[in-house]
Amino acid sequence: MHPIPKSFPLLSLCLIAQISHAGFFTPSATVDELSISLNIPNKTYNSAGIKINTPGVSLAGSQPDCTVISNGYCRFSINDSTPATIALAGLDISPVNITLCLNANGPISCQNYNVTKPMNLDNMTLDAFDLVEDLDSPYRAMTTAQAGIRDGAFHSFSTAPTNGTYAIVNGFDGGGPGHILLGKDLLAGYNTVTFDYRAGWDMVPYGASQNRTFTFRIEPYGGGTALQETVILTANAGTNVNDTGAQSSTIDISSFNTQNIRIVFDWYIPESFTGPALFQLDNINIS
Image 1 (tube, rainbow, N blue to C red):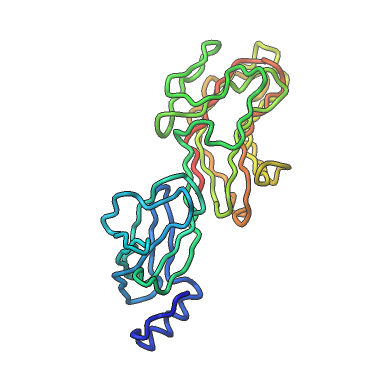
Image 2: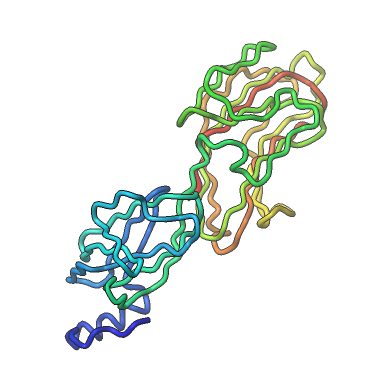
């Protein structure tokens, strides 16, 4: 840490020394911007500074309240009552490492922070996931699709993304036994996963004797034995449900927020082609 200028009053020096252990600032993030709060009471810093240290992430091109200076820092004004807002651009990477300074010109009184960005997987292709695995013979191959997909073999619903233009769609049937899998590796720092889903099936006249399931699972980073799993939906053998309606689920992953993990959506198909179905997964948010 750089020395604090001698011009600071002694009381301010003592206060800043105490606060520095907890952090001069408290940064938080949305998907595309940082919010920075000052932890030093009754103070205004007109030349505070920020630098983004994570490759692939940068300050957005237009920053009305942040001016890039020759040493690479972006200078902004902040006080203890009004957080500063800084827009981000670039890759969807989390956490983002940043340096914040009370004085960007030096730079002076600087600290590094890792900031966890919420992740929204809505409107992304399957390439955004780290695990994509379908049945060898799927009833309907897993893909991203716009509104209006339906299954003509039963009175199914029509897909209708709950947020944005695209949803993840699969056939929730096929040449089982087997699993349809969709997974995403997460670095430490996340607490909650939310998502929307909708399904329909006809397992009455096709000889189905075992239930199909849709499960949310937490695994070690990169995959492995399940650390936690939650059955979200069961399609019971011998039933016909044309439309579950749009459903939402929230999963608490805070007990794993100090470690890197993988989250997995798992559709289990225990038999082979035992009734047409349709499944929509959408609006996946990780925060």
